[in-house]
Length: 570
Image 1 (cartoon, one colour):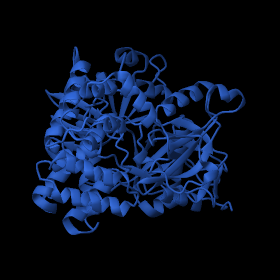
Image 2 (cartoon, rainbow, N blue to C red):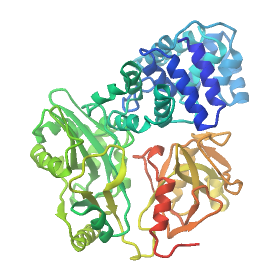
Image 3 (tube, one colour):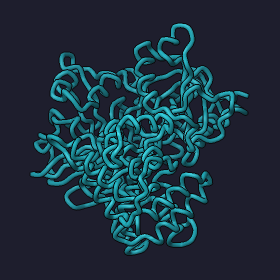
């Protein structure tokens, strides 16, 4: 397929808001693509050249793109900058300044050039990247130039995720979305949209039978559901394993003896560089290949006590890692095993996985098997939970003892137990929400340029409002938020934001990137918020750098939380 043809599809997608219409456009694109290019095409649709979990980035900021456009079209950088200020979009800038060349480049050839840009490193790499991009821009038509510039900037603005791509693959094969569930199950085990699209294009749905957990490719983390109290947990789950709920960072550890150790966050980010101490983890493992699910928790090296989430997340940095290792040492509490020495353990009951885990992990300075009790007694469950609260932990995790590991699922096999209904009169759980925009501050906060922000929960692949937050934020955090959100600001309301009442429209819209955890007194019905409910007296708990927008609380979950309240707020 010629890249110019892909550009025409991208133009259609950009101007289409209907989810079903987007699905059908993508399905038509996939039908026309060749089996050897569909995977590359799917990566490009995500603004990437590799799966999300591979730590490969383009590394091209606006100023370098401006230089590449100027070099490609033989014009002054000032002229490019002036047009950029007018358009507000470097893709449109490249299109407007284009000199009129035609394009015979294929999707695969453009992909290879973009891959070269992403892989180029070392001394003089920026100049090399600019040169490759400039050369590419001279060989394509105007519309193609627009999207070729937007891809390395992660600004395709198409408004859909991998889930829509899965719907489209189903539509490509069957003419409807009936195969979505089976495709999503495979994606949860192997979250590589390029690999999956190429597999079904070549082999059809039967090709998915070969998809298993693989060391080096993260498995989507199993998630937990909410239940109101211990009695309901035992009634619904019967025999359960109960473990401490640590307020740390979810870390999936992939180990291959004699080769490497890699780690991944719950949002599939490769975090290997953040945990250099795990290079020695092989000494604490009875395995040649293994995938472990764990919670990394910082501790005070002097007292041995567990430190806060905020302090633990200071380890999420790319510089001065060795200093961070010394100042914030970590303990990895391992609570599950997903794969060992060639065997996928996803379908194995938790009771058996626990036995395998305890035989695999040696107690050492890095790894500790998370403690647990097994019970069918609600009072014992409640007592264990209260003990964890007294220790300063978040509560307990309750897991059905005979359940498989279910990647990406938020079902009743795992339930988090933070607080029981009626004990405090507050929400029994926090809500994870995405920041949709912010309001310019007044009074003291006018100096910060931000005084409150609008947050939303997930509805399908979009987000709807649930509350505004203006409390629970320190002066320093206001400044940090303003800086981070300003970098994500956009001129118009993003396509992902649905049913936003005009009374909540923020002064500045931002792309859905920042996830926050919030608490409140309770939930109340709301005719104006898109979620149908609102949080009363909301306050910021923390910024969740370990979560992606796709993992925020859903409308159905906040509706369930509302229904669990003892006295429903009208």
